[in-house]
Every structure is written in structure tokens, then in C-alpha cells.
Length: 218
Image (cartoon, rainbow, N blue to C red; front, side):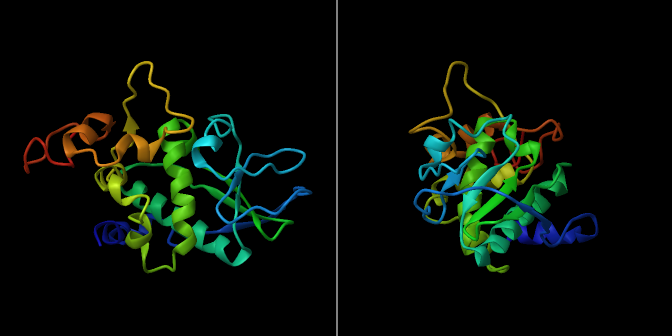
């Protein structure tokens, strides 16, 4: 329970529960209702996209927020899961919290990600995975949700990222949005040396004593 313990050792500095804002986000849905876990950007009418990689073309740094489809009773679970993740990150960093809003549609959840998530295509990809992972969160199974079937192959990258190494070092000319791109495609089954070379931190400036090739060194 590494990340759960790290999160609450410093609970006095962290938000320990998620807050869904009281303001209702108004939107319009005329076409077929989406399946759980689909995404849409804002607009005159919601246009749902199932594939995260397809959605990455529309979700960018300038996006104020995104819609996520899930039943209303699951929306608090998703918000709590993201909140827990941001609590963990804030042990090492200082990021703003994502904001969540109910909508006038009981299956559409409006989410305004922290700029921390929006400022890099790899982090945007990871964020959309986290939203789906949060659908099964019950307040006690954080790591089970975090390392689910889709995510387990990227465990090295997830652990390093949540430890505070969140600065992604892009390869020049490599496109990170679109089909076959993103977090899972990039980090699946990659070894520690590769993950260390791609996820860095400005806050960790010295090598730890455990060895030069372990997950927690810069």
C-alpha cells in the first residue's frame, strides 16, 4: 500500500475527500446515450467518443474541461479517485486540484482537469485512463483500480510518476496523440531504465543511496 500510506502520512496538508461543485453544468444531448466511460468535449451538443486515443485529438492544453459518461452514483467514485491521486502527487509537488461538476444529464459528468494534467499530451492520456479506473473505486481499493488490466503493464511508469517524476521527456518528432499512441502504448512493459529516462523531476536533484538504476533516482 505504498501510495495510500504516503498520501495520509501528511494528511494535514492534503484534501482527504473530493468535492463536487454545487454549480450544475448545463449541456444538451439529442443523439443516442453514450456507454459508460466515453468522453466528449464541450459544445452545442455532446459528441461522445469511446476510444481514448481518438479523443486525444480533441482534448488539448486549451480545453477548459471534458465530459465523462458514467451513472450519477459513480461520479463521486471517479472524483474521489482523482482526488486521491492528486493528494499523492502533492506530497512531492504543488498542483491545483481538478474540479468536478454534476450536469443536467444524469449520465454526463463535467470535469475541469488541473492545468497540471493538461500541459502535456502524455499526462492527458494518463488522466483519461485514471477517470476510467475510478469507476470501480470504493475508497479502499485504490491500488487495485490503479493497476487494473489496462494499467498493469505500465506499473513502473505509474509508480515513478506518482512519486513526483512527472516531467515527460518527449522524443523529437514523435507524435503522442492519436490511435496507437499515449500512455499505455508508450510505457507498456518498459523497463526501469527506459522509464527513468522519460519521466524526470526538477525537484529531485540528487541520487538516492539505493543505487543508480532504481526507480526513484533522477
